[in-house]
Image (cartoon, one colour):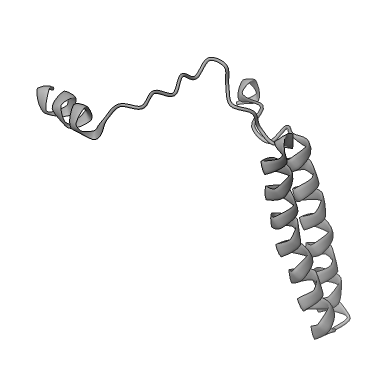
Length: 85
């Protein structure tokens, strides 16, 4: 799996780090007990997903493999190929 660079990107590391902070805030808030801080922690976790996705879309996520070729085959040809097998 390490050969595929699964999660070894700045976007993944940033998203996970922010989510960790959010879970920590929520965990501490449950001990205190503070409902407001629990929801603030949840908001930070949601923000982590947004930040990670934005960074990935900005080019800091996993790049397409140069060994993977994408082809577009019309649906009719795909059905014909499946039917032939």
